[in-house]
Image 1: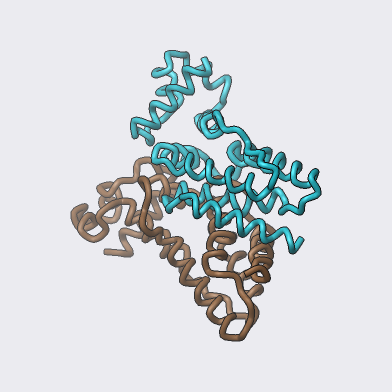
Image 2: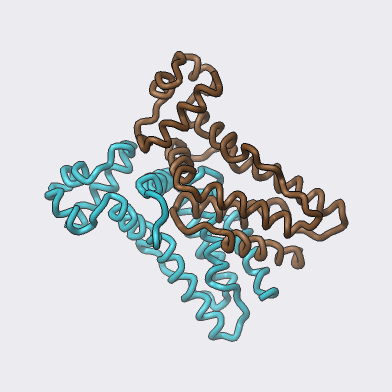
Length: 173
Length: 173
């Protein structure tokens, strides 16, 4: 059922009919019972969040170059290229639009936190200085996603500038 | 006409009927002809962007304490408190949702750029060191707006941490 539902969400986002996405509609396209979707995901918001994480991290291998700033450069360029595509921007917009008020955790944010933790853990293990995980999230991930949903330009050089900025914070910890 | 249209947009956002906001609907509520709105703003996206800027900066005086990091602290706390409110979050979400693909300029971003330029110009005039305008936008404004639309927590301490981080970049320019 999961793959049929994921495919239906992808198809609805891709079709541009973003403002009509409801659980019954997803169910209809996926050929499953709406109550199964309600039971498993609870809301369209939760479903969209989960599909976003699956889509965003699919096939992404975490860079491991032996140097933190090179890892972060590669990682941020992969993310920028991915979330900068029109379909992915549309997807993220649909996801935030489905969200109400304040959430405890955003799945997109949590997956990036785990990835940043892993790269920083490796750097610290090598005895290298590093920014904090929080700084990487606030100063690399947040601006990339901000630019994706607000429709501002996202390219390699933007990603690299953010990484250079966050790496300059290591000296002032 | 402008104030009637602005009020209609505000009312529609406030009513929670976010996914039905169209120019004819705004026109109907404002008691103006839809063609006047099309002529003046061109699209619902442009209209929402303009109302957002007007609402976001209304009555905001730019801090001028004589010290850049205090100016930035105050400024970022005002913005966090403003865009962290549920109605403002809903508004920003409706605005990004109405946006398609990549834009040349985002009005919210441009108004913050002008404000950052002014505070940094004053600091440089006093002979103080300062981060660049781009760094303030990428590392204070982008994370604040990211947290607003993605529904993550936004408070004074978050705003202050961002400012402390960006101020630490001044030494490494």
